[in-house]
Image 1 (tube, rainbow over the protein chains, first blue to last red):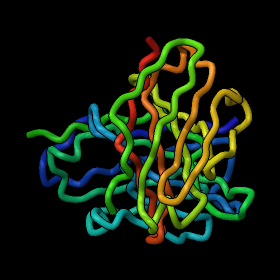
Image 2: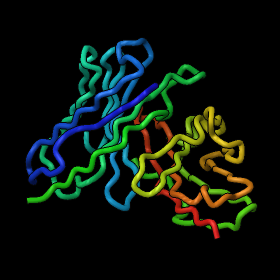
Image 3: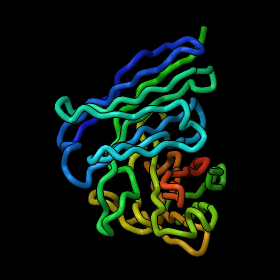
Image 4: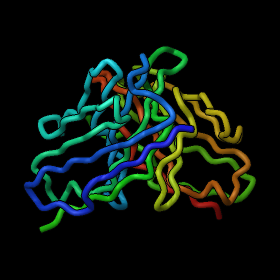
Length: 124
Length: 110
């Protein structure tokens, strides 16, 4: 059974750095072809893809946020970590950790398992 | 990367069929058959409903189907039920090795 759970601070101040941890079970990120991502959703707004990390440690970032994001993994702990620097009130959102399977076509194209999400509020 | 375009809202009566469109560009929807659809209830995480344009994951009702023509993908829900009332988001892989989502569509079952 695949489960993902996000953890981190519920409140951060403007200019601070946010660190979120995703702890997962039911699969291993060291398995060839496994990938994971972070996605966020501001209150009442649409989803936004942020970053992806692959089993071989390849990393991909949102074009608009790449200077502020870092994604990493600790396969021994079954964890993926996202850091976002210089937080601003517009970054207030629910942050989701998701799994990306290798599809039948051999590509990585969709998100099949989602964590429950963690709401992060940016305010002084 | 601009968001994909979805109608803000659609509605239908129980038993009817509805279609939600998702329009992108030749760099995303039009380039790959990598469009997916997600259902989200208030306060809950999104759930995968359709992958790679028209593939339905195990456990998803066959009342949900997907298609694509050019730069526009579509999600059709047939035999509308009250439990289908939710927000729906489309997503596409892009030529920049990133993903882009639509603005979301609120489905109301009358």
